Length: 87
Image (cartoon, rainbow, N blue to C red; front, top):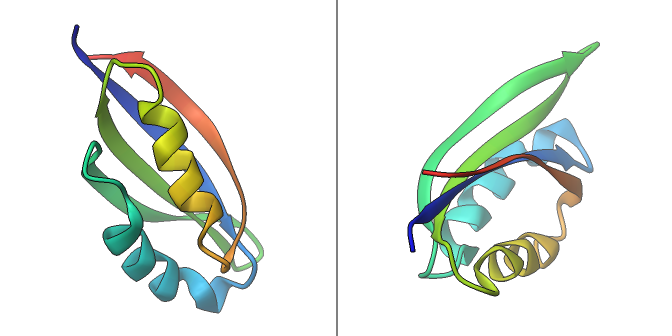
């Protein structure tokens, strides 16, 4: 088995929440995941999203644990998987 690169597009409830989200992601991501990068990306008219890249093992439940951690961050309005690929 290898590893899987997951790239998420995270939409904050408020743009001002991005620093809090970054901080909480750093402490919430399960040990099974390795944080690769977090970058702010402009979307439209001053609204920004956070692009999160993590590496997880190619095993059942790894992606679900990351997504469960993201759902637990109240400042996140929604998120979606932009990319999921074996590395």
